[in-house]
Image (cartoon, rainbow, N blue to C red):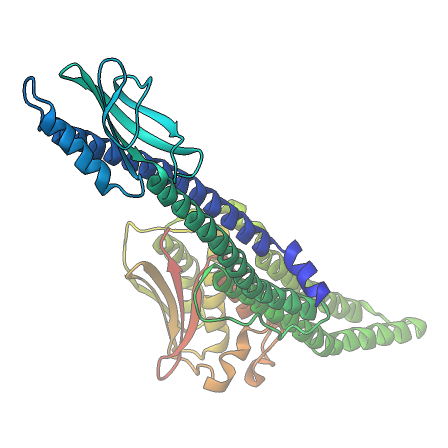
Amino acid sequence: MTGTWSRLLRSTPFRLALTFAFLFMLAFVLSGAIVYQMMSANLAERLDETIKETYSVVTATYAESDIEDLVATVESHAKLSTKKKQLFSLTDAAGNRLAGNFTAAGLPDGFSVFDAVLPGVPPDTEYRAYSGSIGGNNLTVAFSLSETEELERVAMISFGWATLIITGLAVAGGALLASRVQRRLDGIAATMVDVSHGRLDTRIPLTGQDDDIDVVSSQVNAALDRLSALVEGMKQVSANIAHDLKTPLNRLQMILDMASEKNLAGLQVAGELAEAHAESLQINETFDALLRIAQIEAGARKARFTDVDLCEVLKTIAEIYTDVAEDDGKVLSSTQLHETADRIHGDRELLTQMFANLVENALRHCPPGTTIKLSVTRQGERIVAGVADNGPGIPMDERERVFQRLYRLDHSRSTPGNGLGLSLIKAIADLHGASIALDDCQPGLAVVVSFPLA
């Protein structure tokens, strides 16, 4: 338990919660002090108004050269204040008391504050007084400040308790929220530990609140999906390399063994050496293609991105391969290439290679009489390019697997190639943020690549 609290106290969420609580309390104290000062000033103003009104009521009973009504009024008010909360004093010019429940001495005209020493009144009791001359006499009306001071004391105590309660709630709430955030951060940390130990299928649990931690967790999970796919792809590539390159390497070894035997027998080995050279070139081409795919997937070519007219790229492909298709008994159609002012952001050389590979695949695997169509259209905020044919197509259960490195369909193994063409196409599409799909033309196959607008 001590360790848990220690971790919580050191955690960033808890420190942020404490900082927020401190700032909140500082704002509360400052605003409370302002409110207290305003309340105190308002109470003092109201008290002065009450004193002044009482003074006016008493002086209203005075008539010229007749102070009997004034004396009676002062005495009446003095008798009503049995607890001496209110004091009244009427003295003559010599300071002799004429009426009232105390004698005011030495008080200036206007408002003043004094300590009264009276029987039945607690010592150090302060009074707020208003004094003035009336008919050659001095009249003083004073009200005790005890009620105002009591209200201020109650307000101060209430404010103090409110400060303590709010502080406790802020710290407790901060600790609760920090502990919840810390648990989610611990979940992220635990996931990263699992991933570092090789459990790449582990993912960060999401709360479904779509807050900032969920957003970051979703992005991390997406990165882990990508990492898992890359690792799985590397495993698959390793297995495919071991499987698919074993045959040409064995064949190369057999050719070299045969050449060695002929050489020992004094026979010509030029044919075997030429065949071995061709096999070695094919193996080198395979490794070069694998390295090229790795470079593309690493994003090294993004520095060469510019705005590219995709329709122009497809027209260049059509110009290059139209005659090649005719010589092979096929037709390459570019009638569906629609001019547009829209551009995509990409590497022109890689895009040219992508669509050249698609056309070459169609030429290689389709029989004579096949029509291959190139198309470019805009659909919403994307530009969609396609290469379609009416050839044999690809079986539905094989369409996802053809993008794997070194994977080849059974009927394609008799044709030249290394099974990396579609893998390279997929890598180029991913680099450009494009989606690629294989559609059925009934008969035939359409490879559709959808690019975001520049």
